[in-house]
Each structure stands twice: as structure tokens, then as C-alpha cells.
Image 1 (tube, one colour):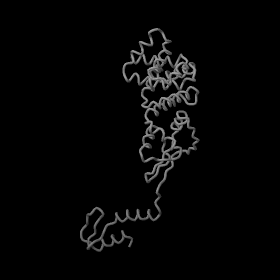
Image 2 (image 1 turned 90 degrees about the horizontal axis):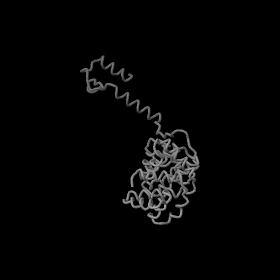
Image 3 (image 1 turned 60 degrees about the vertical axis):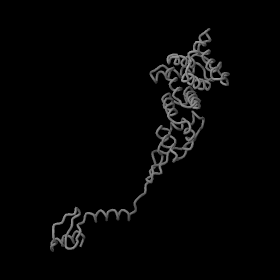
Image 4 (image 1 turned 135 degrees about the vertical axis):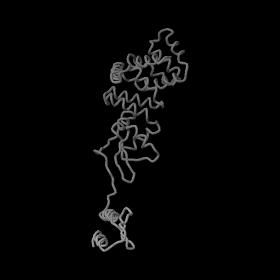
Length: 272
């Protein structure tokens, strides 16, 4: 089956048909689910479905349909008109056919459970809870975060750092922002607005967060004694040193034997 064929199946199934007819196929083997989907798209024209099924010969295509049908099952309560409007916005923003764009989104997700999250984000966009721009951003975030780390996101409702490594990964995807910058290296991170939206609309977890403006900075301030010591060391390092009748400059050079005048200027440099 060509990429063009897959794209057409995606576009037609989202744009122009009721998905209620495939609802009952969810509990059947994957081959029966694909068959139900293709019958829905083709209108069950004689020979068309059998021809399409025969074209699905490799693992990659069957795996795509497994993910795509999972995605569709979450959209059964949406109307063709709602999905058509959604596809139009996708096409306008991406400057590409909606079938191609959504096919790529579905196919790039590496875990079947992510398809459910993608569908929920689609529903959130359909009902205008998120913008089309944020839909694309959240889909990109979903693609890049391993599924095992997605479950760690709720921990960052409060400033947090996880030494196991998920903090750095989540931060690199834009799901977290730096909340506290610590001079000792104990930085803390918190959910970004996008990370919060991923939890709210992708997982159905509604977090009531209170955000502070900017980043807190924790510093180890020097005391007055510390400052005095620093300056005294700096001053000491610039003074010439008198040793065994010879005056030594900070760079190690010496004008030679010390006479009364040099002794006088040396004492003067020391405040005598």
C-alpha cells in the first residue's frame, strides 16, 4: 500500500464518515479492525476492501493501522463536521494535506498508549480548549518524551528535581521550566504552560498551579569578613616583598640591593 493510499484513508476517515460503525470492532483482532476501517472508508464497494487488505503485506503497514485505529476509537463521539474543520486547520497551518500530516503524527508515536493521548489533544483542539499552534507543539512534545517519563510529569507541580535523569529530558522537550537556580547546583524545575496543558488535555489531570514570575535565584552571599579577606589577599599580592636585604616585586623581579630610599618606599607601601 502506497503512502498516498494511507494518506487518503486517513483523510477520508476523519473528514467524511461517522466513526460509530467501527466502535464495535475495538475488541476484535487487529485484522478485523483494519477490515472494519477500510469498509467504512471505501463504502464497502465490491472487491475494494479485499484488494486493500491484500496490499497490507508488511509489519510497518499493519502496525500503522493498529495505531491509527486506536486513535480513531477515541474520536467516535466527534462529528464529521467537527473533524473536517479540524483537518482544514491542520492543512492551513502545516501547508500540507491533512491526511499526510495526521498520518505522520500517528506513525511517529512509539507507544500505542500515546495514540490515546494524541486523540484527546485532538478533541481539545476540536472544542477550542487549545489553539492549533499549541496542538502542534504538544504533539511534538508527546513524540519526544518516552512514555515511561510521561508519568513523571505530575511530580513537577511543585519545584522538583529527579536525579534519575527524567528532569533533564523533560526540560529539553519544553515540558518543564527552571524555577529555582541554586548556586550549589540544586536547581528545581516546574511544569511549563505546555507541560501543564499536556497533562490537562492529554491525561485529563487538572492541576491548579500558582506560578511565580521569573526564576528564583538562590545565592551563597559573602559576609563582610569574607569580602575583607578577599580584598586583603588582593592587596597583599600586589605589594613588593622585602627579604634578606633585597626588595622583590610581585612579578619576581628585583631592583637589586636595598638602600635607604628603597627601604623608605617599601615601608611607605606598607603604610608605615
